[in-house]
Every structure is written in C-alpha cells, then in structure tokens.
Length: 299
Image (cartoon, rainbow, N blue to C red; front, top):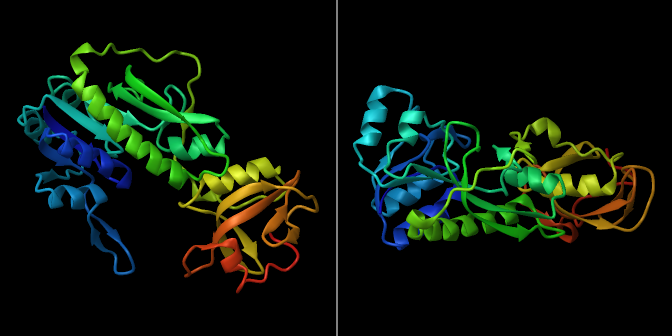
C-alpha cells in the first residue's frame, strides 16, 4: 500500500521499521520539527526523522497542518492510508479524509480507557491490571474513533512505564501490519460511552513522592513515572530520582528508612530497586547505596 507515516518519538520507530520491512511504499514520513536540546540547545532531529532518513525516506516536518498549502501537499501524495502513532499535531478533517482509507492511529491503551496524551503512564499509575494497543480509525475527536483491532497485555507487578512502553511499541507495530493486510475486511467497532477516561499529560509537579500515601500508591507513582520525568524524593538535601520499586513488608513513620532502600509509607512500605543521583547514571539500589547515605528519614 502507499502509506504516509506520521510519528515522532522512540515509540513510533518500531512501527516505521515494520512498515518498511513489510514492503509497503512509504511515500512520506511526517514528524515534529527538530527542537533545541542538550546543553548547547542545538536543534536535534526526532528519533523518527533520524530513522526515516537512514532508510532513505522523504521526511516532512511542518509546524502545523492547518494551512492550505500543507494540506494540498499532503493530499498530493495520493496515499492509500496514513498510519499515525504519537505524531504530536492535530490533524484537520481535510487531512484525515485525504488518504483513500483515511488515517489509522496506533493508541497505547484499551480504548475508551485512557484517551489522550499519556496512556502508558496513567495505566501504571492507576494500578491497571491490563492495558494494550488499539488500531483506531481516526476522526476529529480526541481518540474517539472506532477501533479496528485491539490486543491486551498484563502489566507486570514491577513493570515500569519505560518497559511497558517498549512492549506496547512492538505490539503496535505487529498489530498495524495485521490491520493493513486485512483492512478491507475489518469492521470498525464504535467505542462504548461507558468507561471513558482521559490520560492527561504528565505534570512534573506530580513527581515528588509523598511518603504519607499508602505504599501501593507510592509504588505505582515510582514505576509510572520511570524513566521520565522520574519520581523523586529529598535525601539529605539531594534530589534523588526513584526509577524502580516493589511493595515490601515493614512499617514505620512515613519516610522512615527501614533498612537498605526500603522506606515506610502511610500504610506499608516500598523497596526502591533503582535510583539516580543528580548528574549520575541510574543505578541499582545496591550500587547507589555504596555512595549514598539515606540517613534515617526521607523527605
């Protein structure tokens, strides 16, 4: 099929690679423009742009698709379908309607649960037992379109957003290849009215650990915000990111160090399994405790 691919971050790259490996004719790749990044604030290409150029594909990165000129250029590609995954721009109706089979979105949740910007983070933070991937026919609403295919997966008891992100990315790549092969025979399934939740963009203000919360909530926060932006706490004046955790036995005053990197919460305790000091690489709890004195109480 003649495909327009639209994506930007790492999550989108395996999908692009799968489409290319399957032999589809990728007539253009759309992604976000290069952005200033790093200490020098030099423009940095997105992961999708870097991979697309390595594959010899044409890349476009308009700031917006609301202008007539960009819309005409999009339609002129004469695509059969557009595959959209974590692109980052709103697609006007004229763009959604341009490909013969419309635009398919790969969404990392079991719709209608977790529509919106951060479905993987929110599923882990909410303690969902399962999540998955939906291949959705896009329409003007926010992730409201009918679903063509879906696949679920369990969320592991110690799984982080980062690990789940990678699993769902591979699942989405496999599922969209299946959807394209069966596209004429698939029946769109309208999303139910019940069960709608919204995955709001992660705010860094959410990231500080509140040890007065129950251990189950703290554990979900740590895993849900790992690796980015990273839940954090104050360790004797030093902001330490907590990047992995599990529920532990023990009790004490909230924030009390119970031994090793096991910390008492409002109810129960959490064992931190991975952490990161400012300016240092992420380490296992055993490694980081060789050079970090927790004291007796965390803030």
